[in-house]
Image (cartoon, rainbow, N blue to C red; front, side, top):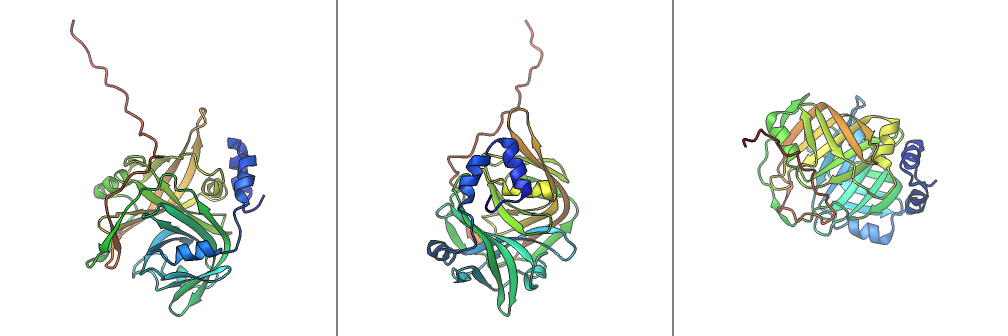
Length: 304
């Protein structure tokens, strides 16, 4: 089956979508079509997922003027500039051979595309030799309008091994995050998760959970987690430009009713606020976002 490894195939089989996944998987290939190249050239940011020198997985956000990401060949993109100082992936993106997953997402149009491949270091940034290129539907993407560039920022604000109270509030208030996973070290992938604020639950300072909403039936992320539990989350604060990066491990729980949920254990945290980040408006929520579960009604005593 094109584009899939054994982990994704196992999840597709379990959920019963192998035939649909085979059809959808025909869209995965190494070539960057003209429409994809044009889309990339308009984007002001790019999400990148990869492992650092110690093998920890991270997801990072690169920002630049449109054109800083561009297709330079039928299977190659170039990214001008690099990550800000202190970002956990700065070294990995400067090294030839790093396996990366990238995601270009446009909140203005609710369009997105993924490109996974291998880094080629360049003097002014880095390039990626594409191995998998494909688009995703706009489901669960919130629409936003760009405002201005942040002119202030203190760089890395905090590092740690668990979430502070303020970071926990940021996670529970998020309507969007990005997740990076890997195929047991053989490739990386960056994907998007969205929903109404509160769809990500904070169970403890080191434990998160979120529902896995129905998607395109590929199960690339969940398939990767079958092969390798390492994962990374990136929570952007759209209005301020702050970024919360989490590295840890994740697993999927399958309910008897067909539901799925992912649990994530935090191992390392980096919170940063760098100047030059693009600031965005408040969201126009996707009509596909499921309603959040209502807490059970409190049954107190009554007096007759």
